[in-house]
Length: 79
Figure 1: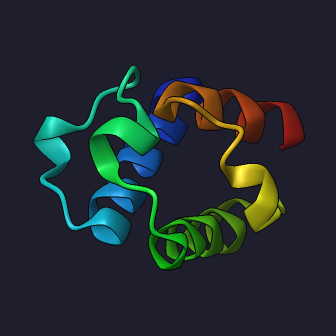
Figure 2: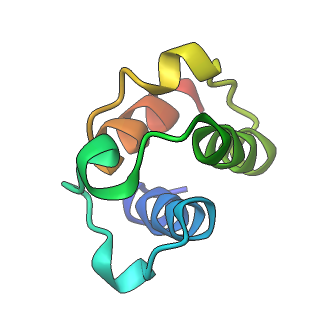
C-alpha cells in the first residue's frame, strides 16, 4: 500500500471518528486543535486503523500524534 493510499484511509477514518468533512482534513491537520480531543473519538479512529491495517495504536499513545501525517508515518513504519 502506498503512502497516498494510507493517507486517504486516515482522512476517511478521521472524518468518520470526529464527524468532520473529509475535504477539510489534510495531511497537516492538527488532530487535537482541529479535530478534537475526546477519547471516544480517538478510540474510534484507533480501532478503524487497527482493523484496516492490523497495526496496534495504544489509546494513550494516540495523543502523541500531532497531525494526520504523523499517524500515516507511524502506520507505514508498522506495516
